[in-house]
Amino acid sequence: MTYALRYSTLGVIIFALILAGLFMGPSNYGFKDAINGIFGSEDTVVNTIMWNIRIPRIAVSFVVGACLGLAGALIQLSSRSPLGDPNLFGIGGAAAIFLACSAAGLITTQEPLIFIGAIGFSIVVSIILVRLISERNLTPTRLAIMGIALGALTIAISTAVISHGSIFSIQVLGLVAGSFAYSNWTIFYYVLITFVICSTIALVLSRQFQPIILGDTLSKSLGVNPNRLRLFSMILAGILTAASVYGGGIIGFVGLISPHISRRLFGNVPVQLFIGSIITGGILTMLSDQFARLLFSPTELPVGMATTVIGAPLMMYLALRIR
Image 1 (cartoon, rainbow, N blue to C red):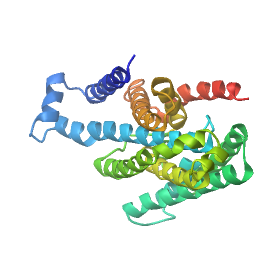
Image 2: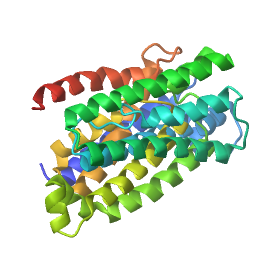
Image 3: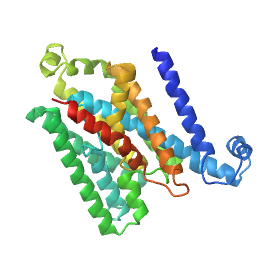
Image 4: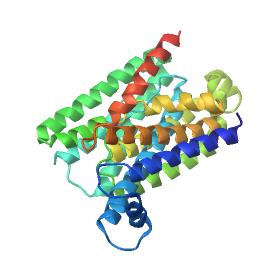
């Protein structure tokens, strides 16, 4: 199967998920009403449902998944760990701490500063991981163990802050387990702009990642500073992860799964890996959101539950293969 055919197949899957997001759900209106709601100029109930609820939700879920997929690829390449995942390693949990403080009223500021603060917290954890990788020379397994411990710690702190603030349970679930129920165009623009900037930088730097796969010594001999590139890529991963948590809460395993699917489809060349991880991350998150939204409609499940069902067995399989 050629690359063009594979990309086309993924495009068809995305289109099918968009249709499911638009036309499937608990609302009682027909296909014709839905079309009129999308393309009509009248301010009707269906028009409001489409443009203020369903279309923003589809858009946010895809771009959040794209952020997670690219962040996972950056972490796995820079750390040479097949178990690299931004939320599993606590980067997303750091952003959740700041967002929980904001939701609990411990931090009161404007919306753009809340977004920037979440990014700042994630970058701190990213830098901690870089120091662990560079100075301790950790094996992939040891790095995964330390990353999981760091992730558990950040989730515990987030939960404690949420409990202290007496936040409604549905807000807790949305932040800790993932939800797109409150998606809107403002969230979409914040996440999209962040994704476009970070993905552009990652694609420009993609050629420098090839020597890192071969080891730090060879990278230095080829003129690539592995520590500097690792720091830069982990900061990018932190920014992308914070944007994803801001858009949909903590959604586990997308960053882990997407690069592995991409490698199967497009190989391990960094530029192909990045593009493939972006697309597969978006698809996995959209699929999980539709599954969570429709399985017990009108009751919604956490999006993170659906991704965990897929990701947990894969992580166990990868752990068994690591020597």
